[in-house]
Image (tube, rainbow over the protein chains, first blue to last red):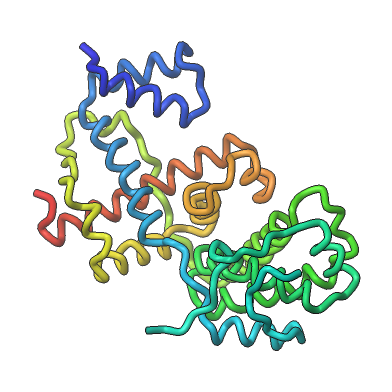
Length: 85
Length: 206
Protein backbone atom coordinates (compact mmCIF):
# COMPACT_ATOMS: atom_id res chain seq x y z
CA UNK A 1 0.00 0.00 0.00
CA UNK A 2 1.51 3.28 -1.08
CA UNK A 3 1.86 5.90 1.64
CA UNK A 4 1.41 9.65 1.10
CA UNK A 5 5.19 9.95 1.12
CA UNK A 6 5.49 7.32 -1.62
CA UNK A 7 2.98 9.14 -3.79
CA UNK A 8 4.73 12.45 -3.26
CA UNK A 9 8.04 10.86 -4.19
CA UNK A 10 6.51 9.22 -7.25
CA UNK A 11 5.20 12.61 -8.41
CA UNK A 12 8.61 14.17 -7.90
CA UNK A 13 10.33 11.47 -9.91
CA UNK A 14 7.78 11.71 -12.71
CA UNK A 15 8.07 15.47 -12.79
CA UNK A 16 11.81 15.10 -13.01
CA UNK A 17 11.51 12.90 -16.07
CA UNK A 18 8.96 15.26 -17.56
CA UNK A 19 6.27 12.59 -17.62
CA UNK A 20 2.53 13.03 -17.05
CA UNK A 21 1.46 11.71 -13.69
CA UNK A 22 -1.01 9.23 -15.19
CA UNK A 23 1.43 8.04 -17.85
CA UNK A 24 2.55 4.38 -17.97
CA UNK A 25 6.02 5.52 -16.90
CA UNK A 26 4.69 7.10 -13.73
CA UNK A 27 2.55 4.08 -13.01
CA UNK A 28 5.66 1.96 -13.31
CA UNK A 29 7.58 4.25 -10.96
CA UNK A 30 4.76 3.95 -8.43
CA UNK A 31 4.81 0.17 -8.66
CA UNK A 32 8.56 0.15 -8.27
CA UNK A 33 8.41 2.31 -5.15
CA UNK A 34 5.89 -0.09 -3.66
CA UNK A 35 8.00 -3.11 -4.40
CA UNK A 36 11.45 -1.69 -3.81
CA UNK A 37 12.10 0.37 -0.67
CA UNK A 38 15.80 0.33 -1.58
CA UNK A 39 14.98 2.27 -4.75
CA UNK A 40 13.17 4.87 -2.68
CA UNK A 41 16.16 5.28 -0.38
CA UNK A 42 18.50 5.41 -3.35
CA UNK A 43 16.45 8.12 -5.02
CA UNK A 44 16.09 10.09 -1.80
CA UNK A 45 19.82 10.03 -1.13
CA UNK A 46 20.53 11.07 -4.70
CA UNK A 47 18.40 14.16 -4.20
CA UNK A 48 20.23 14.88 -0.96
CA UNK A 49 23.54 14.57 -2.81
CA UNK A 50 22.49 17.36 -5.16
CA UNK A 51 21.55 19.53 -2.18
CA UNK A 52 24.95 18.87 -0.59
CA UNK A 53 26.62 20.06 -3.77
CA UNK A 54 24.52 23.19 -3.91
CA UNK A 55 25.84 24.12 -0.48
CA UNK A 56 29.42 22.97 -1.04
CA UNK A 57 29.69 24.70 -4.43
CA UNK A 58 28.06 27.91 -3.28
CA UNK A 59 29.12 31.09 -5.04
CA UNK A 60 32.48 32.49 -3.98
CA UNK A 61 33.27 36.17 -3.89
CA UNK A 62 35.56 37.39 -6.60
CA UNK A 63 39.07 37.79 -5.15
CA UNK A 64 40.27 41.40 -5.28
CA UNK A 65 43.46 40.38 -7.07
CA UNK A 66 41.46 38.60 -9.80
CA UNK A 67 39.27 41.67 -10.19
CA UNK A 68 42.30 43.95 -10.47
CA UNK A 69 43.88 41.80 -13.17
CA UNK A 70 40.59 41.66 -15.05
CA UNK A 71 40.24 45.45 -15.18
CA UNK A 72 43.87 45.74 -16.19
CA UNK A 73 43.57 43.28 -19.06
CA UNK A 74 40.42 45.05 -20.26
CA UNK A 75 42.24 48.36 -19.98
CA UNK A 76 39.45 49.72 -17.82
CA UNK A 77 39.53 51.74 -14.63
CA UNK A 78 38.34 49.90 -11.61
CA UNK A 79 35.40 51.87 -10.29
CA UNK A 80 33.64 51.79 -6.98
CA UNK A 81 30.12 50.48 -7.08
CA UNK A 82 27.56 53.24 -6.91
CA UNK A 83 24.08 54.15 -8.05
CA UNK A 84 25.40 56.56 -10.65
CA UNK A 85 25.41 55.42 -14.25
CA UNK B 1 40.21 37.38 5.94
CA UNK B 2 40.73 37.25 2.17
CA UNK B 3 40.00 40.57 0.51
CA UNK B 4 37.21 40.18 -1.99
CA UNK B 5 35.42 42.18 -4.61
CA UNK B 6 31.70 42.72 -4.15
CA UNK B 7 29.64 40.31 -6.19
CA UNK B 8 26.72 41.48 -8.25
CA UNK B 9 24.00 40.43 -5.81
CA UNK B 10 25.13 43.14 -3.46
CA UNK B 11 25.10 45.86 -6.09
CA UNK B 12 22.49 48.49 -6.59
CA UNK B 13 23.38 49.14 -10.23
CA UNK B 14 21.23 47.22 -12.67
CA UNK B 15 21.63 46.30 -16.29
CA UNK B 16 19.63 48.77 -18.37
CA UNK B 17 19.38 49.36 -22.14
CA UNK B 18 21.05 52.73 -21.53
CA UNK B 19 23.98 51.10 -19.77
CA UNK B 20 24.40 48.58 -22.58
CA UNK B 21 24.16 51.28 -25.24
CA UNK B 22 26.76 53.39 -23.44
CA UNK B 23 29.07 50.36 -23.22
CA UNK B 24 28.51 49.71 -26.93
CA UNK B 25 29.47 53.32 -27.71
CA UNK B 26 32.75 52.71 -25.91
CA UNK B 27 31.88 54.40 -22.62
CA UNK B 28 34.56 52.97 -20.35
CA UNK B 29 32.65 53.68 -17.17
CA UNK B 30 29.65 51.77 -18.47
CA UNK B 31 31.91 48.86 -19.42
CA UNK B 32 33.46 48.92 -15.95
CA UNK B 33 30.00 48.80 -14.44
CA UNK B 34 29.14 45.72 -16.50
CA UNK B 35 32.32 44.10 -15.24
CA UNK B 36 31.38 44.98 -11.69
CA UNK B 37 27.92 43.54 -12.22
CA UNK B 38 28.83 40.18 -13.68
CA UNK B 39 32.47 39.30 -13.09
CA UNK B 40 31.64 37.40 -9.90
CA UNK B 41 29.10 35.18 -11.59
CA UNK B 42 31.26 34.43 -14.61
CA UNK B 43 34.19 33.65 -12.32
CA UNK B 44 32.03 31.21 -10.36
CA UNK B 45 30.83 29.62 -13.58
CA UNK B 46 34.49 29.09 -14.48
CA UNK B 47 35.29 27.59 -11.09
CA UNK B 48 32.39 25.15 -11.34
CA UNK B 49 33.04 24.14 -14.91
CA UNK B 50 36.83 24.11 -14.99
CA UNK B 51 37.59 23.17 -11.37
CA UNK B 52 40.59 25.40 -10.75
CA UNK B 53 41.17 29.07 -10.01
CA UNK B 54 43.69 29.78 -12.77
CA UNK B 55 41.44 28.42 -15.52
CA UNK B 56 38.48 30.26 -13.99
CA UNK B 57 40.41 33.53 -14.10
CA UNK B 58 41.49 32.93 -17.70
CA UNK B 59 37.89 32.22 -18.65
CA UNK B 60 36.71 35.38 -16.90
CA UNK B 61 39.15 37.53 -18.83
CA UNK B 62 38.44 35.84 -22.16
CA UNK B 63 34.68 36.10 -21.66
CA UNK B 64 34.76 39.86 -21.06
CA UNK B 65 37.31 40.51 -23.81
CA UNK B 66 35.14 38.55 -26.26
CA UNK B 67 31.95 40.25 -25.10
CA UNK B 68 33.33 43.78 -25.43
CA UNK B 69 34.94 42.98 -28.77
CA UNK B 70 31.63 41.67 -30.11
CA UNK B 71 29.34 44.12 -28.37
CA UNK B 72 28.26 45.52 -31.74
CA UNK B 73 26.72 42.16 -32.60
CA UNK B 74 24.75 42.03 -29.34
CA UNK B 75 21.16 42.53 -30.48
CA UNK B 76 19.59 42.93 -27.07
CA UNK B 77 17.31 39.93 -27.60
CA UNK B 78 18.46 38.62 -24.25
CA UNK B 79 20.08 40.40 -21.34
CA UNK B 80 23.77 41.18 -21.54
CA UNK B 81 24.21 38.76 -18.66
CA UNK B 82 22.61 35.87 -20.59
CA UNK B 83 24.78 36.73 -23.55
CA UNK B 84 28.10 36.87 -21.70
CA UNK B 85 27.11 33.82 -19.64
CA UNK B 86 26.73 31.86 -22.88
CA UNK B 87 30.07 33.15 -24.08
CA UNK B 88 31.53 31.91 -20.77
CA UNK B 89 29.91 28.48 -21.07
CA UNK B 90 31.12 28.08 -24.64
CA UNK B 91 34.64 29.08 -23.69
CA UNK B 92 34.56 26.62 -20.78
CA UNK B 93 33.32 23.82 -23.02
CA UNK B 94 36.08 24.58 -25.52
CA UNK B 95 38.70 24.34 -22.77
CA UNK B 96 37.20 21.13 -21.43
CA UNK B 97 37.21 19.56 -24.87
CA UNK B 98 40.87 20.45 -25.26
CA UNK B 99 41.68 19.01 -21.84
CA UNK B 100 39.69 15.83 -22.40
CA UNK B 101 41.92 15.02 -25.37
CA UNK B 102 44.81 14.82 -22.94
CA UNK B 103 43.09 12.98 -20.11
CA UNK B 104 41.82 9.49 -19.52
CA UNK B 105 38.12 9.65 -18.74
CA UNK B 106 36.56 7.81 -15.86
CA UNK B 107 33.85 5.49 -17.05
CA UNK B 108 30.45 5.66 -15.46
CA UNK B 109 28.65 2.48 -14.73
CA UNK B 110 25.10 2.44 -15.98
CA UNK B 111 22.83 2.89 -12.98
CA UNK B 112 20.13 0.26 -12.94
CA UNK B 113 17.37 0.62 -10.42
CA UNK B 114 16.33 -2.99 -11.05
CA UNK B 115 19.58 -4.18 -9.54
CA UNK B 116 19.02 -2.30 -6.31
CA UNK B 117 16.17 -4.45 -5.10
CA UNK B 118 17.25 -6.70 -2.26
CA UNK B 119 20.55 -4.89 -1.80
CA UNK B 120 21.46 -3.33 1.51
CA UNK B 121 21.18 0.39 0.79
CA UNK B 122 21.60 2.58 3.82
CA UNK B 123 19.49 5.61 4.35
CA UNK B 124 21.64 8.57 5.35
CA UNK B 125 21.25 10.05 8.80
CA UNK B 126 19.68 13.49 9.05
CA UNK B 127 22.89 15.09 10.29
CA UNK B 128 24.78 14.50 7.01
CA UNK B 129 23.72 17.94 5.72
CA UNK B 130 25.39 19.58 8.72
CA UNK B 131 28.69 17.90 7.80
CA UNK B 132 29.00 20.10 4.72
CA UNK B 133 30.83 22.65 6.84
CA UNK B 134 33.53 20.02 7.47
CA UNK B 135 36.47 20.93 5.19
CA UNK B 136 37.45 17.31 4.62
CA UNK B 137 33.90 16.47 3.53
CA UNK B 138 33.82 19.45 1.18
CA UNK B 139 37.10 18.29 -0.29
CA UNK B 140 35.66 14.80 -0.81
CA UNK B 141 32.67 16.34 -2.61
CA UNK B 142 35.01 18.39 -4.76
CA UNK B 143 37.16 15.38 -5.66
CA UNK B 144 34.10 13.37 -6.69
CA UNK B 145 32.94 16.19 -8.95
CA UNK B 146 36.47 16.55 -10.36
CA UNK B 147 36.48 12.80 -11.12
CA UNK B 148 33.22 12.95 -12.99
CA UNK B 149 33.71 12.77 -16.74
CA UNK B 150 33.44 16.21 -18.34
CA UNK B 151 30.43 15.31 -20.47
CA UNK B 152 28.42 14.48 -17.35
CA UNK B 153 29.91 17.21 -15.19
CA UNK B 154 28.97 19.97 -17.64
CA UNK B 155 25.35 18.88 -17.53
CA UNK B 156 25.37 18.60 -13.74
CA UNK B 157 26.96 22.04 -13.31
CA UNK B 158 24.63 23.78 -15.73
CA UNK B 159 21.43 22.09 -14.55
CA UNK B 160 21.91 21.48 -10.85
CA UNK B 161 24.39 24.15 -9.80
CA UNK B 162 23.77 26.97 -12.25
CA UNK B 163 20.01 26.30 -12.41
CA UNK B 164 19.77 26.26 -16.20
CA UNK B 165 16.66 24.67 -17.73
CA UNK B 166 16.91 21.33 -19.56
CA UNK B 167 16.04 23.10 -22.78
CA UNK B 168 18.74 25.76 -22.43
CA UNK B 169 21.33 23.22 -21.34
CA UNK B 170 20.49 21.06 -24.34
CA UNK B 171 20.83 24.02 -26.65
CA UNK B 172 24.13 25.24 -25.28
CA UNK B 173 25.65 21.76 -25.08
CA UNK B 174 24.30 20.80 -28.49
CA UNK B 175 22.48 17.77 -27.10
CA UNK B 176 18.90 16.58 -27.20
CA UNK B 177 16.83 17.22 -24.09
CA UNK B 178 16.65 13.46 -23.54
CA UNK B 179 20.42 13.26 -23.57
CA UNK B 180 20.65 16.04 -21.02
CA UNK B 181 18.26 14.17 -18.73
CA UNK B 182 20.12 10.89 -19.07
CA UNK B 183 23.50 12.50 -18.45
CA UNK B 184 22.15 14.43 -15.51
CA UNK B 185 20.78 11.30 -13.92
CA UNK B 186 24.07 9.46 -14.41
CA UNK B 187 26.02 12.36 -12.96
CA UNK B 188 23.78 12.51 -9.91
CA UNK B 189 24.05 8.78 -9.32
CA UNK B 190 27.83 8.83 -9.72
CA UNK B 191 28.12 11.61 -7.15
CA UNK B 192 25.65 9.96 -4.82
CA UNK B 193 27.65 6.74 -4.83
CA UNK B 194 30.91 8.59 -4.19
CA UNK B 195 29.38 10.40 -1.26
CA UNK B 196 28.03 7.17 0.17
CA UNK B 197 31.44 5.52 -0.03
CA UNK B 198 32.97 8.49 1.77
CA UNK B 199 30.29 8.41 4.48
CA UNK B 200 30.96 4.74 5.04
CA UNK B 201 34.72 5.29 5.28
CA UNK B 202 34.08 7.98 7.89
CA UNK B 203 31.88 5.62 9.88
CA UNK B 204 28.92 7.96 9.43
CA UNK B 205 26.97 5.16 7.77
CA UNK B 206 26.62 1.61 9.03
